[in-house]
Amino acid sequence: MNKEGMFKLIKKLPFDKKESIYKEGKTEIFLFRPSKLKKRFQNYNKEKNFQLILNDGDREFIPNHLRVFIDLNLRIRSRPELKKKLLLAFDNIFYGEDPEEELKELSKEKFEHFLNPLIAIGYCAQIFLIEQEYNYNKESKFDPLTLFLQGWIRQFIDSLTEIDNLCMSVCNRQPPKAKYVNLENKKNKKHVNNLRSLWYLEEK
Image (cartoon, rainbow, N blue to C red):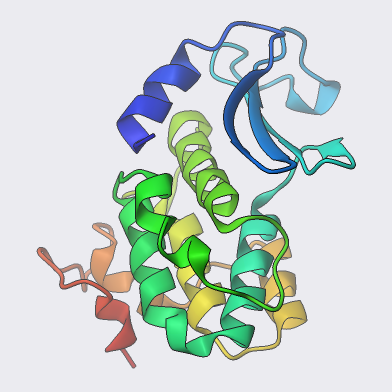
């Protein structure tokens, strides 16, 4: 499902009913809109708030952005020759394309290390991007504001930095490196229109 279709589905989610959006083997992804918010989420808009739930066959849990970042970093360490294909696929998901279409060929590749099926990770990335666009209510230094998340996806795929250091930077709420976002950020004085695919691989 492309971004437009997923966005429409999310906006129509009923309260307190899990909606399955993707299943592959033992892995299944659900969306859920709770009618009651926990205390720490009391400032959230209940109508817009929703959760991504992942069932991997043994347990069911609510993943966070690190699952996407770590999975992609593990994959690229075992198959560095697929870096450009992974970057392009996840950029296309960022631009609104269907994760299943973008990742169907790459999902046939063998990776020594990963967390979940690649298409499931693609859907997680798509949903996290939509969540940020739909729910984020603070002033952002990025336009589009989802570029903050996409910049980290790019950096985790492209960077040779150790994974624990990358994760620490994310957990400390640091922005991704400028080279992955600056030319695409409309709030940045270096912003450029009509960039080529994977433009950031040419940035220094």
